Length: 380
Image (cartoon, rainbow, N blue to C red):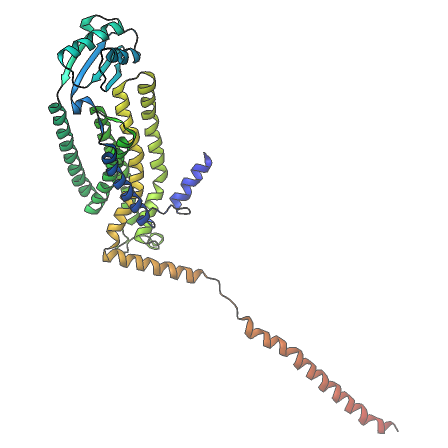
């Protein structure tokens, strides 16, 4: 735990950094490739696994059952000779729901009687109804209309909040990637698309936007005063892109913690609803949230933040600030560089000293010899 805390401190101080912005071309290329693959998956697999609410069909609800297992319901439908696709789920304690393709009156009566015998209940405890495809089409249209209105209002609110349309556009890019990858995952795995899944999906969009707002708030704080030079000197030494990348790293631990905290209860609901209770509504709701939280967190860090840095990098003021920061960083490195002493000049000077000393020694010896020679005649 302490290592993770130290890792977070290193990210916040800038001693360690993950290249969200410096390698934005790589991350955005990967995101674009994943979006293309997500768009091709439904085409290859023949569309989505739509629930009865979107395709239409017959639905049976068995209430007050003593045994909530799903196998009797599946066997009851098969025993009537119906060879089409059917879905049996536990929507509440003691309540079983059976969904099939559209049945005629005779088939509906046969399935209803089979369910009465399978779960040992009275006939009035088995309700049957028909869901028309036009009603499912209406749900789809309302969903798309609501999604468009939601995204439009969100874009306007974020533009007003951050006072720049570029942050709003970058956040919408992250939301678009989240939507595309979640849809692609549903199509790839074959998850059933139900109204509960749509509700969970819309909830995930709100979470993704919340995570983006947290990161962009830190970006705005780190870049305040950079373009006009009013920021403190330590901040001015970093370029605009470096400050954006620093903000993403400073909020990385928070994003991870928030995602884990969000995934734990959602995973619990998914496990309890699907594995223990067999509740289809809980499973559909939790499954959409689980997949969307993962993709939403990644899209905020690897798409929204790099897109914002790319949009701002073409501005003349940002280019000037980047150049100014580079000059300041170079000057700081020059001042801090240690001074070197010229060793080549000093060596000849030290080498000449022994020569001068030997010359003086020879001169003194010669003078002493001459004085000694001059004293010899005086003694004689």
